Length: 424
Image (cartoon, rainbow, N blue to C red; front, side):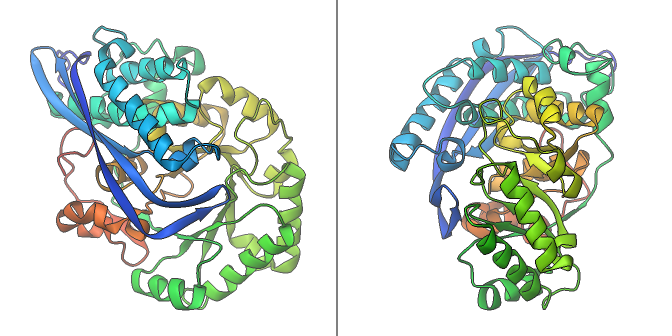
């Protein structure tokens, strides 16, 4: 824990970013298109805490099809503009964080608000570009203080950017969602619409012991989606007795009524498959203000979680009013935002899950550490071993039990160094 007399306020000194392109070993097909190659933004930030300077790192894929699903622009053009924004954030990071020393979560939320006010790119894309820098700030402050970034809330600090969204002390609310570290996290395997179950998925399930399956559905025809869900459940129960399912149409459903119809059809077609389904992710359009749906009937059957639509804490009360069951968090929207959203969800009685945007390497570690400290209903999805294993090669040699699931779990090491994982 930080020394009681040690300052925790940090000032950004300098930041930089570089990019590495990764090819997918097989395409990731979602309702809005196909992902076969992504750029990873790798940020480094130097901060000063008291008289100590330290450098931290963070990273994220620039997943344009997820954050910026605009069919009028090519992947190459969107990737160029996302990289340009990352460079812009690096140059102006100090100003974007308020040009003064503050607690790292306060710096991260100032960064969040600054990039949300920008224009030219969708808000989700802007948050994705900012997220490596937020992670790097927390990593650097932890290294400077020689503590975990999750131990920066053990004494009262001022967090004015989030006080209006939380009851009581904002710092105490953040601390309340941070638990003791867990070493074992359930491993999830993502099944696409085109994946061959018998020859491709079942052997991998038996090899790694996967028991948690996320199914990508197209959301356009419930008869087809129900048939695929039942097919996946029945085929994969030949490899393991107990399966947990989640489904994701990536906003392709037209409305909440279509989701309710899917659930009713699934329950009728295969009650066991229905029972295995734990939650659904963002079935309809991400703009929940312009595309208002009543989710109460769906939520009474299964949890339905806001994912792409969660870009601001201002949306939480509206999400509750619409009947959303909870939040699907991603660290690629910002470490500070994810922690704050988790605390706000807890106070509102909302469920929380954690996904990882198929992020590799350091971002993979970041998501795993978040899940080890913040309780979620799914632990965490860590999909890069499935899609970009080469991006994990250097990390996997040091942390094989984390990056290569066995017996259905990822295992974190016993000793976690200071910061947010860059020293692992």
